[in-house]
Amino acid sequence: MKNSTLVFRSLGIIIFLAGLAHLFSFGIDTSDDAPTPTIETNAVPVEQPEAENPTEKPVANTAYNPETDHLIGQWKVAYNTEDFKGAIVYKIKKESKVFNAYTHQYQDENGYAEKAKGSKALTITSFNGSKGKGIYNIEYEGKQYEVDCKIAQVDENTFTLSYDYYGYGDVETWKRQ
Amino acid sequence: MIDFLAKKLDWLDVHHWFYIFNDLSLFYIIIPFFVLELIRYAYLKRLDKDLVLDSIANVITFGGFFLVEVILGILAITKVYYWVYNNISLPHLELNWATVICCVLLADFAYYWEHRTMHRIGIGWATHTVHHSSPHFNMSVAYRFGPLDAIMPVVFSLPIVMLGFDPILVLLSEVFVQVFQTLLHTEIIGKLTKPIEFIFNTPSHHRVHHGSNRQYWDKNYAGILIIWDRMLGTFEPEKEKVVYGISQPINSVNPIVVFFHGITRFVKKLGQIKGFSNKLLAFVKPPDWMPKQ
Image 1: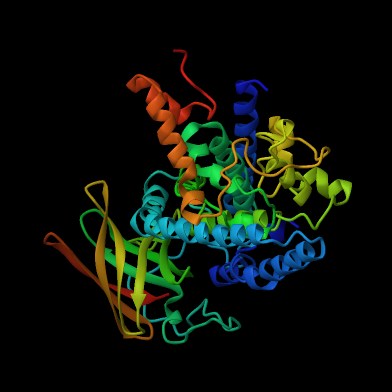
Image 2: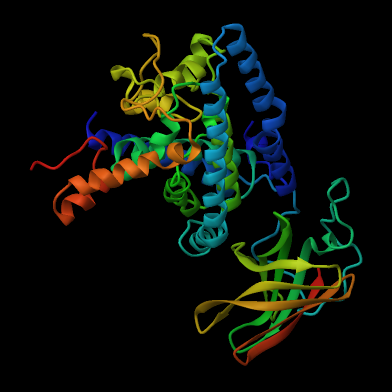
């Protein structure tokens, strides 16, 4: 068999299988979450009181760890920097023994909301129910940095995330959405 | 069906399924099957000292391979995989049935090309010849590995990570393919039904792969699906009785000799080749290649 035939057939197989996986990941939405409008008409205040009904707590999962898995769900963080004034809603998921936070929604200072791309913002590598450590992806002057961070639970619906990267640091308050 | 394939899965569930097949299969199928093979050997009066020592050597070579795999894993694999995943991959894929199935199929396809490369380049065959050097064919042969056998899979699975698949899922899928392959190392099972023989790699197809009969050389590289061989021109059905082993038998059951004989032979070959560039070419040229003197 000619080498060119081998290359084209192989590429065809790879493109077909990878394309299928991407189609089922990004092309078909079977999410049972409540639909999130891309633009909200009602103003949403940046700082909201704590939600009384936290969502996305797995109840039927036998592997649910009540000490740590309350992190799973949506969390909102308010920002007031030169680059961004508003809030970001993150979705924390438990994946392979670690918790990953993905951007879920951007809200500007006037309360207008826009669906985020779902990129990974934070990986909580260890958490004992009150304190933990992780890797936080921050953007500074257009560049992405991965910095070590610390997590401290304040109460059931609030935790703080702190980091210090060569003197550039911050403490963020994450509130359950 | 589409909803089912796109349904998000929990990592813990996926880990659990792979754990049942990848890890526990040693206890519920591989060891019992090997015992069955030993009984069959005894019944056929083929259970001799050579076969027992050969099987022990196989398991010891696996120990050597596993040691290299662990060192490689700790030092590099996970870090390299995650660096690639975080820096040069397509958008990260969700965990659903479709991505798990596609990942296993891609790992199987990567295995095909990795396996083919191991047979068709000098340094690949120097390590993979260990797996083929046994004159027997049973489940213990599946564990007969060469010292560098752990390296090639990394090269061929990194592109799957670059396609957006989670590195852990890729590693689990690779092990899944290997475990499936392990189950093919048996003479007990003859040919299966035609549709299965057409689509899947079977003990019959894999016996051909281990044959030293000339028409069986470099055939049936598949892991799970034999259709890769059919599509890429390397399929050969089992017709003539298979003679297991390699063209230059090692005639030894010493685990050290077994484990290193491919590398030793390759180093000797390099010593016979003149010129630095020719020596380098010997690494990537086919195993029987020699420069025109």
